[in-house]
Length: 346
Image (tube, rainbow, N blue to C red; front, side):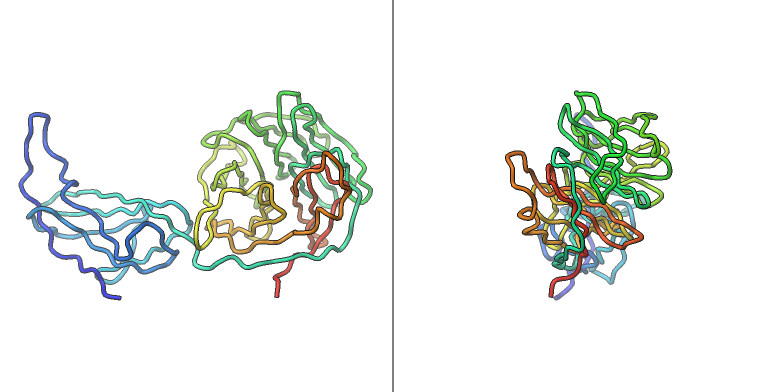
């Protein structure tokens, strides 16, 4: 492909109107060789500045979400640690002045997701009245959160027998959502109430609350040992400071073709976020740094292996058992909990 050269551009003298000086940025625009707004991470793109006037441009620098971009003359390389909607910025220097141009682009993953499947290793009993929202292991003990107004709870469970060892019921106005455990604290979300709860891991005693910041809903939670990750029903997964619970920033979940906004229950394992796909028998494997969806696990057929009844609902709930190096999955109002091994499909 031929580069789009950055040609000398010029701008006329500023005009003064009754309301003041015209915006000099109106004399420029950013032209990208491929056109449109969708690009792959790391893609090299021809770029130029188009002008509509006659003042010589001294130099142009390009940035992506504030980070400088590099490339050969007439090209830029779209490198970024995270993906999704980005602001491509040109900083034009002319006659001692700086002019800023912004253009929104969508930065997608380089590769399409790989397809995974599963093998059932063990099957355990599970409370079919539990509208499962979150699952997480601490050692060999399973913790579970359930939802719906009037039946939302936090539970400590013996996964081998399905026995609920200890529980805390939320007040009727709260619809319980995902959980995660960091140290001695359990963090639990609610759906639309804009509030989360803190519990003592051992006693399940409520120790505090926190309010959501930039996100409107609570869906899933996980952590990497230092910070929390929170899904909210959009393409964003928010990174929360565990001390203040402030949403510091977000990654966006994308494939090589588009953004994806159905991440529900979350589990963090070795730099990857395993996320239930809302209302689907599948799970995404997401790079926790970039947001790239690197794999999709097809759990088709699993729902057929549980008791079929009128309250049976969707596949939801994922917990990783570190000592066994396996995943445990279930669904809302399922009477079974499955221990599975996940592997790439041939």
